[in-house]
Length: 508
Image (cartoon, rainbow, N blue to C red; front, top):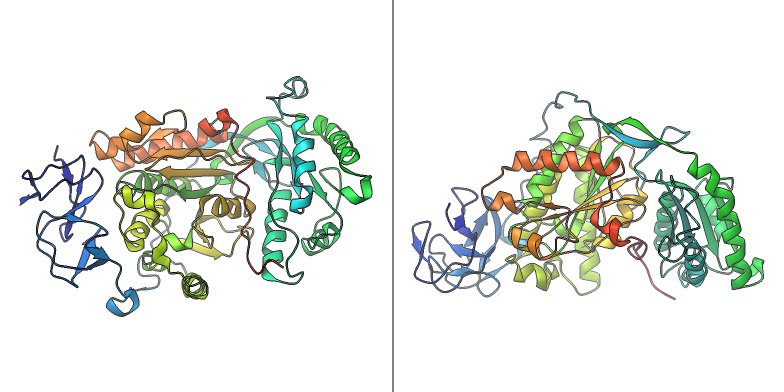
Protein backbone atom coordinates (compact mmCIF):
# COMPACT_ATOMS: atom_id res chain seq x y z
CA UNK A 1 0.00 0.00 0.00
CA UNK A 2 1.29 3.46 -0.90
CA UNK A 3 2.01 5.92 1.88
CA UNK A 4 0.14 8.55 -0.09
CA UNK A 5 -3.28 8.92 -1.73
CA UNK A 6 -4.18 10.57 -5.03
CA UNK A 7 -7.92 11.17 -5.09
CA UNK A 8 -8.20 12.11 -8.78
CA UNK A 9 -5.77 11.87 -11.71
CA UNK A 10 -6.07 15.63 -12.32
CA UNK A 11 -5.31 16.61 -8.71
CA UNK A 12 -2.29 18.81 -8.00
CA UNK A 13 -1.77 17.35 -4.53
CA UNK A 14 -1.27 13.99 -2.86
CA UNK A 15 -2.48 13.18 0.66
CA UNK A 16 -0.06 11.61 3.14
CA UNK A 17 -1.40 8.33 4.54
CA UNK A 18 1.30 8.50 7.21
CA UNK A 19 4.06 10.98 7.92
CA UNK A 20 6.36 11.34 4.91
CA UNK A 21 10.07 11.99 5.35
CA UNK A 22 12.08 14.37 3.20
CA UNK A 23 13.95 12.57 0.42
CA UNK A 24 11.41 9.74 0.12
CA UNK A 25 9.38 9.22 -3.05
CA UNK A 26 5.64 9.77 -3.32
CA UNK A 27 3.74 9.60 -6.58
CA UNK A 28 6.90 9.99 -8.63
CA UNK A 29 8.08 13.16 -6.81
CA UNK A 30 10.72 13.58 -4.11
CA UNK A 31 9.28 14.71 -0.78
CA UNK A 32 10.75 18.02 0.41
CA UNK A 33 10.70 18.17 4.22
CA UNK A 34 8.30 16.48 6.65
CA UNK A 35 4.69 16.02 5.54
CA UNK A 36 2.41 15.18 8.50
CA UNK A 37 -0.21 12.46 8.14
CA UNK A 38 -3.36 13.79 6.47
CA UNK A 39 -1.56 16.77 4.95
CA UNK A 40 -0.90 17.58 1.28
CA UNK A 41 2.21 17.61 -0.86
CA UNK A 42 2.50 19.01 -4.37
CA UNK A 43 2.35 16.41 -7.14
CA UNK A 44 3.91 18.93 -9.56
CA UNK A 45 5.40 22.40 -9.60
CA UNK A 46 2.73 25.09 -9.15
CA UNK A 47 3.28 28.73 -10.08
CA UNK A 48 2.24 31.60 -7.83
CA UNK A 49 -1.44 32.47 -8.37
CA UNK A 50 -2.19 29.15 -10.06
CA UNK A 51 -5.27 27.19 -8.87
CA UNK A 52 -4.66 24.04 -6.86
CA UNK A 53 -6.98 21.05 -7.23
CA UNK A 54 -8.07 18.27 -4.89
CA UNK A 55 -11.08 16.04 -5.69
CA UNK A 56 -10.57 17.57 -9.18
CA UNK A 57 -11.98 20.78 -7.66
CA UNK A 58 -10.24 24.06 -6.83
CA UNK A 59 -9.33 24.26 -3.13
CA UNK A 60 -7.37 27.52 -3.37
CA UNK A 61 -4.54 29.33 -5.13
CA UNK A 62 -0.78 29.21 -4.66
CA UNK A 63 0.27 32.28 -2.69
CA UNK A 64 3.88 31.73 -3.84
CA UNK A 65 5.70 29.25 -6.11
CA UNK A 66 5.37 25.66 -4.91
CA UNK A 67 7.92 23.03 -5.95
CA UNK A 68 6.97 19.41 -6.62
CA UNK A 69 7.13 17.52 -3.31
CA UNK A 70 6.59 20.63 -1.16
CA UNK A 71 4.20 20.65 1.78
CA UNK A 72 1.04 22.45 0.58
CA UNK A 73 -0.67 24.25 3.44
CA UNK A 74 -1.49 27.67 4.89
CA UNK A 75 2.00 29.03 4.22
CA UNK A 76 1.67 28.70 0.43
CA UNK A 77 -2.05 28.17 -0.33
CA UNK A 78 -4.86 30.67 0.15
CA UNK A 79 -8.47 31.01 -0.85
CA UNK A 80 -7.96 33.99 -3.15
CA UNK A 81 -10.78 36.20 -4.29
CA UNK A 82 -13.02 33.23 -4.91
CA UNK A 83 -15.78 35.07 -6.74
CA UNK A 84 -13.33 36.74 -9.08
CA UNK A 85 -10.79 33.96 -9.61
CA UNK A 86 -13.18 31.15 -10.43
CA UNK A 87 -16.87 30.66 -10.97
CA UNK A 88 -18.74 27.66 -9.63
CA UNK A 89 -20.91 26.04 -12.27
CA UNK A 90 -24.25 25.51 -10.53
CA UNK A 91 -25.59 23.41 -13.45
CA UNK A 92 -28.94 23.12 -11.70
CA UNK A 93 -30.40 19.63 -11.91
CA UNK A 94 -27.63 18.28 -14.15
CA UNK A 95 -26.94 15.31 -11.87
CA UNK A 96 -30.53 14.44 -10.92
CA UNK A 97 -31.09 10.75 -11.44
CA UNK A 98 -33.99 8.31 -11.17
CA UNK A 99 -34.76 7.18 -7.64
CA UNK A 100 -33.07 3.98 -6.54
CA UNK A 101 -35.19 0.85 -6.27
CA UNK A 102 -37.11 0.91 -2.97
CA UNK A 103 -35.63 -1.32 -0.30
CA UNK A 104 -37.16 -2.47 2.98
CA UNK A 105 -35.62 -2.71 6.42
CA UNK A 106 -37.06 -2.36 9.91
CA UNK A 107 -35.98 -1.22 13.34
CA UNK A 108 -37.66 -1.37 16.74
CA UNK A 109 -39.17 2.05 17.36
CA UNK A 110 -41.83 3.73 19.46
CA UNK A 111 -44.92 4.46 17.38
CA UNK A 112 -46.82 7.54 18.59
CA UNK A 113 -50.58 7.89 18.30
CA UNK A 114 -50.30 10.45 15.48
CA UNK A 115 -48.12 8.20 13.33
CA UNK A 116 -44.72 9.64 14.25
CA UNK A 117 -42.03 7.12 15.16
CA UNK A 118 -39.38 7.63 17.83
CA UNK A 119 -35.97 6.11 18.39
CA UNK A 120 -35.99 7.08 22.10
CA UNK A 121 -38.63 7.64 24.79
CA UNK A 122 -37.78 10.68 26.91
CA UNK A 123 -39.64 13.26 28.94
CA UNK A 124 -38.28 16.76 28.34
CA UNK A 125 -38.07 19.86 30.51
CA UNK A 126 -37.57 22.99 28.36
CA UNK A 127 -36.89 26.53 29.57
CA UNK A 128 -38.53 29.42 27.73
CA UNK A 129 -35.75 31.73 28.86
CA UNK A 130 -32.36 31.57 30.53
CA UNK A 131 -33.98 32.87 33.76
CA UNK A 132 -35.87 29.58 34.22
CA UNK A 133 -32.93 27.33 33.31
CA UNK A 134 -31.89 26.62 36.92
CA UNK A 135 -35.40 25.56 37.89
CA UNK A 136 -35.72 23.37 34.78
CA UNK A 137 -32.46 21.59 35.55
CA UNK A 138 -33.45 21.14 39.21
CA UNK A 139 -36.69 19.45 38.12
CA UNK A 140 -34.90 17.03 35.80
CA UNK A 141 -32.24 16.29 38.43
CA UNK A 142 -34.90 14.73 40.64
CA UNK A 143 -35.21 11.99 38.00
CA UNK A 144 -31.52 11.58 37.20
CA UNK A 145 -30.39 7.97 36.95
CA UNK A 146 -27.02 9.08 38.31
CA UNK A 147 -28.39 11.02 41.32
CA UNK A 148 -31.66 9.22 42.05
CA UNK A 149 -31.56 5.85 40.22
CA UNK A 150 -34.47 4.53 42.25
CA UNK A 151 -36.98 7.08 40.91
CA UNK A 152 -37.14 5.75 37.33
CA UNK A 153 -36.63 2.10 38.34
CA UNK A 154 -40.39 1.57 38.09
CA UNK A 155 -40.45 3.02 34.55
CA UNK A 156 -38.02 0.92 32.47
CA UNK A 157 -39.48 2.07 29.15
CA UNK A 158 -38.54 5.70 29.87
CA UNK A 159 -35.03 6.61 28.70
CA UNK A 160 -34.84 9.53 31.09
CA UNK A 161 -36.01 13.01 32.03
CA UNK A 162 -33.74 15.64 30.45
CA UNK A 163 -33.56 19.40 30.88
CA UNK A 164 -32.76 21.38 27.75
CA UNK A 165 -31.96 24.98 28.66
CA UNK A 166 -30.42 27.91 26.78
CA UNK A 167 -29.05 31.41 27.21
CA UNK A 168 -31.67 33.41 25.37
CA UNK A 169 -35.39 34.27 25.48
CA UNK A 170 -35.21 37.87 26.67
CA UNK A 171 -33.39 41.11 25.89
CA UNK A 172 -34.44 40.67 22.26
CA UNK A 173 -36.83 42.17 19.74
CA UNK A 174 -40.27 40.70 20.44
CA UNK A 175 -41.03 40.79 16.70
CA UNK A 176 -37.54 40.02 15.43
CA UNK A 177 -35.96 37.12 13.60
CA UNK A 178 -34.05 35.97 16.68
CA UNK A 179 -37.21 35.35 18.69
CA UNK A 180 -38.91 33.68 15.72
CA UNK A 181 -36.00 31.25 15.36
CA UNK A 182 -35.98 30.51 19.11
CA UNK A 183 -39.72 29.87 19.18
CA UNK A 184 -39.50 27.63 16.11
CA UNK A 185 -36.68 25.67 17.74
CA UNK A 186 -38.55 25.19 21.02
CA UNK A 187 -41.69 24.14 19.13
CA UNK A 188 -39.69 21.54 17.22
CA UNK A 189 -38.43 20.04 20.47
CA UNK A 190 -41.80 20.27 22.21
CA UNK A 191 -43.34 18.17 19.43
CA UNK A 192 -40.35 15.89 18.78
CA UNK A 193 -41.23 12.20 18.48
CA UNK A 194 -38.46 11.21 20.90
CA UNK A 195 -40.22 13.15 23.65
CA UNK A 196 -43.29 11.32 24.92
CA UNK A 197 -44.15 14.39 26.97
CA UNK A 198 -42.70 17.85 27.59
CA UNK A 199 -42.82 20.37 30.42
CA UNK A 200 -41.98 24.03 29.62
CA UNK A 201 -40.93 26.35 32.45
CA UNK A 202 -40.80 30.13 32.10
CA UNK A 203 -40.09 33.06 34.40
CA UNK A 204 -43.12 35.14 33.48
CA UNK A 205 -41.85 38.53 32.25
CA UNK A 206 -39.53 37.45 29.42
CA UNK A 207 -39.74 38.42 25.76
CA UNK A 208 -40.49 34.80 24.91
CA UNK A 209 -43.87 34.67 26.61
CA UNK A 210 -45.10 31.08 26.83
CA UNK A 211 -48.70 31.87 25.81
CA UNK A 212 -47.52 33.85 22.79
CA UNK A 213 -45.16 30.98 21.87
CA UNK A 214 -48.01 28.47 22.10
CA UNK A 215 -50.21 30.61 19.85
CA UNK A 216 -47.53 31.32 17.24
CA UNK A 217 -46.54 27.62 17.17
CA UNK A 218 -50.13 26.31 16.94
CA UNK A 219 -49.64 24.39 20.16
CA UNK A 220 -51.94 23.93 23.10
CA UNK A 221 -51.46 22.61 26.60
CA UNK A 222 -52.57 19.02 27.27
CA UNK A 223 -51.52 15.77 28.90
CA UNK A 224 -48.24 15.62 26.94
CA UNK A 225 -47.42 19.36 27.03
CA UNK A 226 -47.59 21.27 30.32
CA UNK A 227 -46.43 24.86 30.83
CA UNK A 228 -46.13 27.29 33.77
CA UNK A 229 -44.09 30.25 35.07
CA UNK A 230 -41.94 30.71 38.17
CA UNK A 231 -43.61 34.03 38.97
CA UNK A 232 -47.02 32.35 39.09
CA UNK A 233 -45.79 29.44 41.22
CA UNK A 234 -44.46 31.30 44.24
CA UNK A 235 -40.73 30.99 43.60
CA UNK A 236 -38.05 28.47 42.76
CA UNK A 237 -38.74 25.85 45.43
CA UNK A 238 -42.45 25.70 44.67
CA UNK A 239 -41.72 25.73 40.92
CA UNK A 240 -39.46 22.68 41.26
CA UNK A 241 -42.03 20.87 43.40
CA UNK A 242 -44.77 21.61 40.87
CA UNK A 243 -42.61 20.43 37.96
CA UNK A 244 -41.66 17.21 39.74
CA UNK A 245 -45.33 16.49 40.47
CA UNK A 246 -46.31 17.05 36.83
CA UNK A 247 -43.61 14.68 35.58
CA UNK A 248 -44.74 12.02 38.05
CA UNK A 249 -48.16 12.35 36.38
CA UNK A 250 -46.57 11.91 32.92
CA UNK A 251 -44.42 8.87 33.72
CA UNK A 252 -47.06 6.08 33.69
CA UNK A 253 -48.27 7.01 30.18
CA UNK A 254 -44.69 7.32 28.94
CA UNK A 255 -43.83 3.90 30.37
CA UNK A 256 -46.79 2.33 28.57
CA UNK A 257 -45.05 2.73 25.21
CA UNK A 258 -43.30 -0.35 23.79
CA UNK A 259 -40.88 -0.79 20.91
CA UNK A 260 -42.29 -2.48 17.81
CA UNK A 261 -41.06 -3.16 14.27
CA UNK A 262 -41.16 0.02 12.17
CA UNK A 263 -40.03 0.81 8.64
CA UNK A 264 -36.62 2.46 8.22
CA UNK A 265 -38.49 5.19 6.34
CA UNK A 266 -39.18 6.70 9.77
CA UNK A 267 -35.49 7.35 10.46
CA UNK A 268 -34.33 10.94 9.95
CA UNK A 269 -30.60 11.54 10.42
CA UNK A 270 -28.91 14.88 11.01
CA UNK A 271 -25.48 14.81 9.34
CA UNK A 272 -22.66 16.50 11.24
CA UNK A 273 -18.87 16.76 11.03
CA UNK A 274 -16.76 18.38 13.71
CA UNK A 275 -13.04 18.48 14.30
CA UNK A 276 -12.51 17.59 10.63
CA UNK A 277 -9.11 16.68 9.23
CA UNK A 278 -7.43 15.85 5.94
CA UNK A 279 -8.98 12.37 5.97
CA UNK A 280 -12.60 13.50 6.49
CA UNK A 281 -13.33 13.77 2.78
CA UNK A 282 -11.58 10.46 2.11
CA UNK A 283 -13.03 8.10 4.71
CA UNK A 284 -15.79 8.94 7.20
CA UNK A 285 -17.67 11.56 5.15
CA UNK A 286 -18.01 9.56 1.91
CA UNK A 287 -18.77 6.41 3.95
CA UNK A 288 -21.54 8.27 5.75
CA UNK A 289 -22.70 9.43 2.32
CA UNK A 290 -22.92 5.80 1.22
CA UNK A 291 -25.03 5.07 4.31
CA UNK A 292 -27.25 8.07 3.45
CA UNK A 293 -27.86 6.65 -0.04
CA UNK A 294 -28.91 3.36 1.59
CA UNK A 295 -31.23 5.17 4.00
CA UNK A 296 -32.83 7.14 1.16
CA UNK A 297 -33.34 3.92 -0.80
CA UNK A 298 -35.20 2.60 2.26
CA UNK A 299 -37.47 5.65 2.30
CA UNK A 300 -35.67 7.49 5.10
CA UNK A 301 -34.43 11.07 5.36
CA UNK A 302 -31.02 12.69 5.86
CA UNK A 303 -30.42 16.37 6.62
CA UNK A 304 -27.15 17.98 5.50
CA UNK A 305 -26.40 21.33 7.16
CA UNK A 306 -23.63 23.74 8.21
CA UNK A 307 -23.83 26.29 5.39
CA UNK A 308 -20.43 27.91 6.14
CA UNK A 309 -18.96 24.42 5.65
CA UNK A 310 -20.43 23.79 2.21
CA UNK A 311 -19.29 27.20 0.93
CA UNK A 312 -17.44 26.71 -2.32
CA UNK A 313 -18.96 23.27 -2.81
CA UNK A 314 -22.62 24.24 -3.06
CA UNK A 315 -22.48 23.69 -6.82
CA UNK A 316 -22.17 19.94 -6.14
CA UNK A 317 -25.58 20.16 -4.42
CA UNK A 318 -27.37 22.41 -6.91
CA UNK A 319 -26.51 19.89 -9.62
CA UNK A 320 -28.62 17.36 -7.65
CA UNK A 321 -31.56 19.70 -6.94
CA UNK A 322 -34.86 18.23 -8.15
CA UNK A 323 -36.22 21.67 -9.14
CA UNK A 324 -34.71 25.09 -9.88
CA UNK A 325 -36.60 26.46 -6.85
CA UNK A 326 -34.74 24.08 -4.54
CA UNK A 327 -31.38 25.08 -6.02
CA UNK A 328 -32.12 28.81 -5.87
CA UNK A 329 -33.16 28.57 -2.22
CA UNK A 330 -29.76 27.06 -1.42
CA UNK A 331 -27.94 29.74 -3.43
CA UNK A 332 -29.92 32.44 -1.59
CA UNK A 333 -28.75 31.05 1.74
CA UNK A 334 -25.14 31.14 0.52
CA UNK A 335 -25.53 34.81 -0.42
CA UNK A 336 -27.12 35.54 2.97
CA UNK A 337 -24.07 34.08 4.71
CA UNK A 338 -21.70 36.19 2.59
CA UNK A 339 -23.59 39.30 3.66
CA UNK A 340 -23.90 38.15 7.29
CA UNK A 341 -20.18 37.53 7.73
CA UNK A 342 -19.27 40.77 5.93
CA UNK A 343 -21.61 42.70 8.27
CA UNK A 344 -19.55 41.44 11.22
CA UNK A 345 -16.19 42.12 9.49
CA UNK A 346 -15.57 38.43 8.99
CA UNK A 347 -15.25 36.08 6.06
CA UNK A 348 -16.26 32.50 5.45
CA UNK A 349 -12.62 31.46 5.19
CA UNK A 350 -12.28 32.21 8.95
CA UNK A 351 -13.41 28.56 9.00
CA UNK A 352 -11.45 26.05 9.02
CA UNK A 353 -10.59 26.12 12.71
CA UNK A 354 -7.05 25.76 14.11
CA UNK A 355 -7.75 22.07 14.78
CA UNK A 356 -8.91 21.54 11.19
CA UNK A 357 -5.70 23.11 9.91
CA UNK A 358 -3.55 21.02 12.24
CA UNK A 359 -5.30 17.98 10.74
CA UNK A 360 -4.38 18.95 7.18
CA UNK A 361 -7.18 21.22 5.93
CA UNK A 362 -6.15 24.59 4.54
CA UNK A 363 -9.10 26.59 3.13
CA UNK A 364 -12.86 26.53 3.53
CA UNK A 365 -13.06 25.37 -0.10
CA UNK A 366 -11.11 22.23 0.75
CA UNK A 367 -13.09 21.62 3.93
CA UNK A 368 -16.42 22.12 2.16
CA UNK A 369 -15.61 19.71 -0.66
CA UNK A 370 -15.03 17.00 1.93
CA UNK A 371 -18.04 18.00 4.03
CA UNK A 372 -20.62 17.67 1.24
CA UNK A 373 -19.56 14.03 0.80
CA UNK A 374 -21.69 13.26 3.89
CA UNK A 375 -24.72 13.81 1.68
CA UNK A 376 -24.00 10.87 -0.63
CA UNK A 377 -25.23 11.03 -4.21
CA UNK A 378 -29.03 11.09 -3.86
CA UNK A 379 -31.16 13.88 -5.31
CA UNK A 380 -31.59 17.06 -3.24
CA UNK A 381 -35.32 17.14 -2.51
CA UNK A 382 -35.74 20.33 -0.44
CA UNK A 383 -33.98 23.18 1.36
CA UNK A 384 -35.13 24.39 4.79
CA UNK A 385 -34.33 27.33 7.01
CA UNK A 386 -33.04 26.78 10.53
CA UNK A 387 -35.28 24.57 12.72
CA UNK A 388 -38.06 24.37 10.11
CA UNK A 389 -40.08 21.18 10.23
CA UNK A 390 -38.70 18.75 7.63
CA UNK A 391 -41.60 17.26 5.70
CA UNK A 392 -39.88 15.92 2.57
CA UNK A 393 -38.43 12.41 2.43
CA UNK A 394 -35.00 11.66 1.06
CA UNK A 395 -31.89 13.86 1.06
CA UNK A 396 -32.58 17.46 2.15
CA UNK A 397 -30.63 20.52 3.27
CA UNK A 398 -31.13 22.79 6.30
CA UNK A 399 -29.41 26.17 6.63
CA UNK A 400 -27.46 26.28 9.91
CA UNK A 401 -24.18 27.68 11.24
CA UNK A 402 -21.15 25.41 11.18
CA UNK A 403 -20.92 25.31 14.98
CA UNK A 404 -21.94 21.72 15.70
CA UNK A 405 -24.23 22.14 18.76
CA UNK A 406 -26.15 24.98 17.09
CA UNK A 407 -26.40 23.09 13.81
CA UNK A 408 -27.56 19.81 15.34
CA UNK A 409 -30.08 21.65 17.53
CA UNK A 410 -31.71 22.99 14.36
CA UNK A 411 -31.73 19.54 12.76
CA UNK A 412 -33.37 17.92 15.78
CA UNK A 413 -35.93 20.73 15.93
CA UNK A 414 -36.68 19.89 12.29
CA UNK A 415 -37.36 16.25 13.19
CA UNK A 416 -34.02 14.40 13.16
CA UNK A 417 -34.37 11.41 15.49
CA UNK A 418 -30.68 10.52 15.18
CA UNK A 419 -27.37 12.30 14.56
CA UNK A 420 -24.35 10.86 12.69
CA UNK A 421 -21.23 12.86 13.52
CA UNK A 422 -17.86 12.39 11.77
CA UNK A 423 -14.65 13.61 13.37
CA UNK A 424 -10.95 13.49 12.63
CA UNK A 425 -9.59 15.36 15.64
CA UNK A 426 -11.92 13.89 18.29
CA UNK A 427 -15.33 14.66 19.76
CA UNK A 428 -17.25 14.01 22.95
CA UNK A 429 -20.57 15.31 21.62
CA UNK A 430 -23.98 13.94 22.54
CA UNK A 431 -27.50 15.01 21.63
CA UNK A 432 -30.60 14.46 23.75
CA UNK A 433 -33.21 13.39 22.81
CA UNK A 434 -31.67 12.10 19.53
CA UNK A 435 -28.86 9.51 19.89
CA UNK A 436 -25.57 10.54 18.27
CA UNK A 437 -23.27 8.09 16.48
CA UNK A 438 -19.68 9.30 16.13
CA UNK A 439 -17.43 8.13 13.29
CA UNK A 440 -13.64 8.57 13.32
CA UNK A 441 -11.87 9.41 10.07
CA UNK A 442 -8.61 7.72 11.07
CA UNK A 443 -7.49 4.75 13.15
CA UNK A 444 -5.09 6.78 15.32
CA UNK A 445 -8.07 8.74 16.68
CA UNK A 446 -10.04 5.54 17.18
CA UNK A 447 -7.22 4.01 19.20
CA UNK A 448 -6.82 7.17 21.26
CA UNK A 449 -10.51 7.92 21.95
CA UNK A 450 -12.44 4.66 21.63
CA UNK A 451 -14.59 5.48 24.63
CA UNK A 452 -16.19 8.32 22.62
CA UNK A 453 -16.19 6.94 19.06
CA UNK A 454 -18.74 4.38 17.80
CA UNK A 455 -17.30 3.43 14.39
CA UNK A 456 -13.76 3.60 12.99
CA UNK A 457 -13.68 4.62 9.33
CA UNK A 458 -9.88 4.64 9.32
CA UNK A 459 -10.03 1.18 7.76
CA UNK A 460 -10.77 2.96 4.47
CA UNK A 461 -7.54 4.98 4.66
CA UNK A 462 -5.61 1.78 5.43
CA UNK A 463 -7.15 -0.03 2.47
CA UNK A 464 -8.82 -2.82 4.47
CA UNK A 465 -12.39 -1.67 3.77
CA UNK A 466 -14.15 0.02 0.86
CA UNK A 467 -16.41 3.07 1.17
CA UNK A 468 -19.41 0.93 0.19
CA UNK A 469 -18.60 -1.69 2.83
CA UNK A 470 -18.20 0.94 5.51
CA UNK A 471 -21.44 2.60 4.38
CA UNK A 472 -23.28 -0.68 4.93
CA UNK A 473 -21.64 -1.02 8.35
CA UNK A 474 -22.81 2.48 9.30
CA UNK A 475 -26.34 1.80 8.05
CA UNK A 476 -26.52 -1.40 10.10
CA UNK A 477 -25.35 0.53 13.15
CA UNK A 478 -28.00 3.18 12.51
CA UNK A 479 -30.71 0.49 12.60
CA UNK A 480 -29.28 -0.97 15.81
CA UNK A 481 -29.07 2.45 17.45
CA UNK A 482 -32.59 3.36 16.36
CA UNK A 483 -33.70 0.10 17.98
CA UNK A 484 -32.28 1.14 21.35
CA UNK A 485 -28.61 0.21 21.35
CA UNK A 486 -26.86 2.93 23.38
CA UNK A 487 -24.22 5.08 21.70
CA UNK A 488 -20.97 5.96 23.44
CA UNK A 489 -22.19 9.50 24.19
CA UNK A 490 -25.39 8.09 25.73
CA UNK A 491 -23.35 5.78 27.93
CA UNK A 492 -21.50 8.85 29.25
CA UNK A 493 -24.69 10.87 29.71
CA UNK A 494 -23.96 13.58 27.14
CA UNK A 495 -26.77 15.57 25.57
CA UNK A 496 -28.37 18.03 27.97
CA UNK A 497 -25.70 20.72 27.58
CA UNK A 498 -25.57 20.46 23.79
CA UNK A 499 -28.96 22.12 23.22
CA UNK A 500 -27.86 25.46 21.70
CA UNK A 501 -30.47 27.37 19.66
CA UNK A 502 -29.05 29.80 17.11
CA UNK A 503 -28.98 33.31 18.57
CA UNK A 504 -29.64 35.98 15.95
CA UNK A 505 -30.12 39.72 16.31
CA UNK A 506 -29.13 42.34 18.85
CA UNK A 507 -29.03 41.61 22.56
CA UNK A 508 -30.75 44.58 24.22
